[in-house]
Image (cartoon, rainbow, N blue to C red; front, side, top):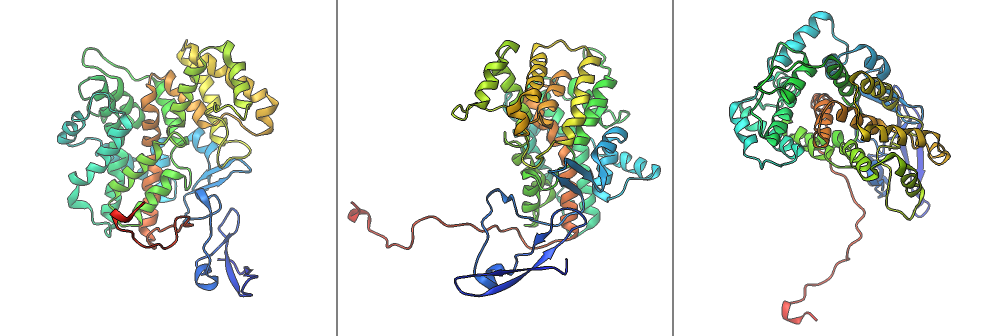
Length: 430
């Protein structure tokens, strides 16, 4: 809380109200408007919460104007270059980078929770064979509360932490099982001798008929992508997790709600939409046509994977992943016309004055979809991969909220319906 105050005066009534100014360690100052309705009789109107802070948090800092993203104070560039995904998960959850001993204990805890109850596999097999993996993921995550109903005392910090570790550990197992169900393949159980990303790749792509060796290039790329997607402040899915968490709901229900929010094409589904767009364009020689359509305000076509709601300069994650994208394609020797088309679209958009002036640079969704495709993941799994990574952010945010519980989330509205009117009997209505 700052000593500064902003005085708000209602010219109609002449009443004034002092609004305290909240100042975090970084970022813009924020007006505390809790007393606004009681003092002046007003609410605020902020569609999409573009100017509203819903909570205070010490986890992730973003400066969209400067292109800054930090986890617990550490620049994303440093973590992407030096860290592992589980080390970042520990950082998000506990606030500090782990010592060697702390990391080994944490990794061991996660590894020992990778298995799921066999009845859960039966549940997954009950879904229709062509069910979208996100539908399966959402349903199965919520069902975990039925398997761990004996440890859902959210007033117990130890049980909260256990639930968080379980979700980070089991999410890849559930995600891979949903894919294999779709493919008609038998369940692949987690190999705890492998690291987090390699274990997931093995559960995804190994088959009983032959030996499967995890590509180090694929595991490294997945580790990077998971770090970049681990948390992103109060985005739509994280805000959903916190809103549901404010009701006292169990953590599995909270994260299931985050998965549902992430599924939207404007959020986690954007990388899947990028590949759909590339399929629509079809070939390199049609890129100028679609560039022209994107510039036409009367044409509904939009370039997916360009621009960002928060970043007005550049997305720091995109700068990292762009370099990795070109390296991965080169190392894997992937020859895919769609990937060549994406590179041509990127080149034109980065040089075109229309996109440069509007800061419509390729974002993290544009490049992540290309890498996922190069690694052999179908487009239906792209958002699932996002969910695996973002689970760490969701549980970190949920744990932070549980440690500092506040009031239940309850946004207000501007009512635009009918004013009071009297009921008319059915036979008397015109």
